[in-house]
Image (tube, rainbow, N blue to C red; front, side, top):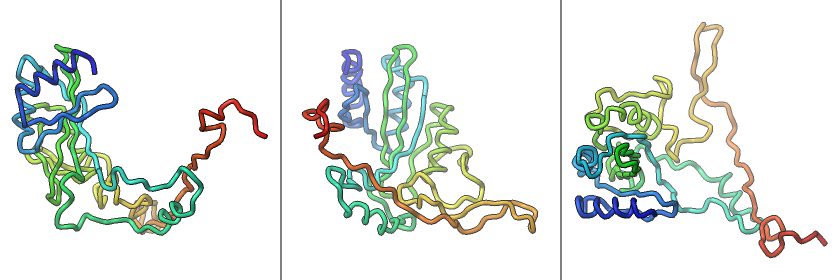
Amino acid sequence: MTDRYETLAARIDERFGAQMTRVASSCGELTFVVDKDDLHEVATALRNDGEFGFEMLMDVCGVDYLSYGSDEWTTSSATGTGFSRGVEREPVILDEADEFDAERFAVVYHLLSLHHNLRLRLRVYTGTNNPPVVKSVVDIWNGANWFEREAFDLYGILFEGHPDLRRILTDYGFIGHPFRKDFPLIGNVEVSYDPEKGRVAYKPVSIEPRTLVPRVIRDDNRYSADLKGATDG
């Protein structure tokens, strides 16, 4: 982290205190977690206060942390266990759940200060509500309009106060949210032209689910630093 960003982090801590919690970074980027109830106040201050001046919203994206940090495959040696888990595992459908894990869904905001030439990332968890809801920031950064529609379309996150919250990438009749980790990889329906009906028609998906064998990391001269350059045999 450069001195300029450490100075910015110190100013944010002094100005917002417990409203913003810094996230450790391994790539030199500054990220803070903001409670969704404080989002509107914090975002307005970051835009309007001259010491921050984040007048541009570069991106808004959703994140699904379902199974985050869990290893799906054992890759240190060849194993049939990981493969069978992938083949036999049924998708976990949680759309009908009464509530989600408090940190399953998040909305991430990427901010840019043109005046100070600084970037900042904000992360807001949606909480346990189903459907997940956060306040829209369209009235702060008008460019959030289509970004929030994309997050709604792909993750099912609702943005309270958005002027026109509807799907933007999927079809009008699409069911579900394809970037959720419990959404089936083969989808739910497929689309094709029906010559008898004279129009495009939906029908149940006919693709057979399959799981690819994961890459196995073996201790040979492709991966081991001690063996690199050594010849076989």
